[in-house]
Length: 266
Image: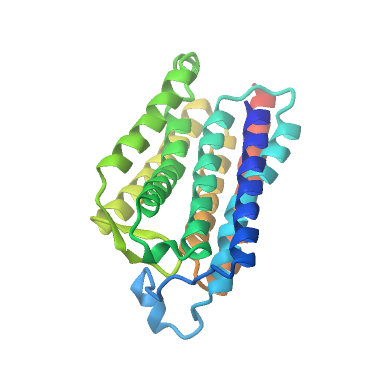
């Protein structure tokens, strides 16, 4: 499955490069409006808006997926792990950020088209999928749940798709990061925080129940991953980009190494 995901992510990147070249040749690249979300960034001088930082941040999140899968393929080549399947779900959420390229590449933000609406749904799926994937990894790691990995993955994706369909989207209000805005933004943000907190607590309880510190390392690494991811997906400045990338990389390294050590110990 990891190999399939690896090649799929390469196809996504190749498609993004193809559209970028077309937009560059046609001089169709149009930066989105300067709507800062969250709004406090506008009042902080060193968080100055940069369209280049936005594009680089999107690229980093998308390129992160195949690079991480390639590393995981080497690390887990002879080590079966169900949790790595849910980590692929997280990486799928990262790939969803790639559709944000379309917003500035063809001035999509000013069209109010069905394509912009569809891109908003895809991004919503990714934003919800990333924290939920860790929660499912924690809750579905018991011996009984490992036998139903296909069912649990199906439920995970079904939840994100259903909520993406019913969530209200405002295509007339585009953020400086190239993202459409959703209804009830505070509720959406708090829900993602709640999923993250529940994931951390679940991993910590597992560490106590199984008397292993590896799950504690996994819990803290997850916080680093989601913090770095959070900075990069809202990044429209170089400060957030510089903060997000090291957190994402360090967290991923710690998470995968701890997961590998856990299964080697088993």
